[in-house]
Amino acid sequence: GIFFNADNLKLALPLITLCVVYGFFKFIPLQIGVPLLVFLILGYKIRQSRLNAERLSAVNSLEKEGTDNEKAYRMLMEEEERRVVNEKAKKRKKADKKQIKPRTPQLTMTNDESDEDDDEYDLAKISKKKS
Figure 1: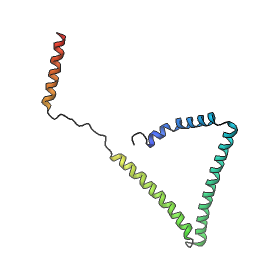
Figure 2: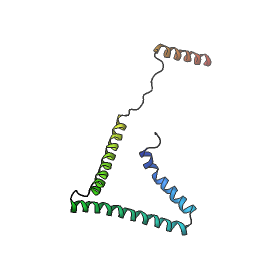
Figure 3: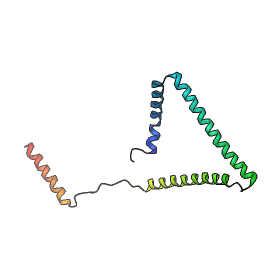
Figure 4: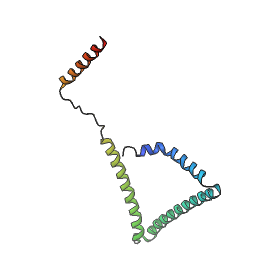
């Protein structure tokens, strides 16, 4: 929509981060919060290292066995296809944003004489009040 877009998120991210950190340390005691944060960070690092090792083993198996290992080949191709699809979607969104033109207000009155008459009537009304 109009209010929820990437630009607004980029601008609001520091404030959102500050509020989340404040709320976390305000409502969760340090004896629980700090070990919880350490646990979450370590879990994330372990997950990333496993994914990297899995990708590396797939590449190594392809190099050793050639293209016989279809599972590893499929996994690499799916990852590449996802990357290409995401890039195309981003380009399409940028193109759509460029094509959107700002709306221009349309005039409701088509008769120019009626505008002039209204102005003269208003001017006459003002001049009567002054005298």
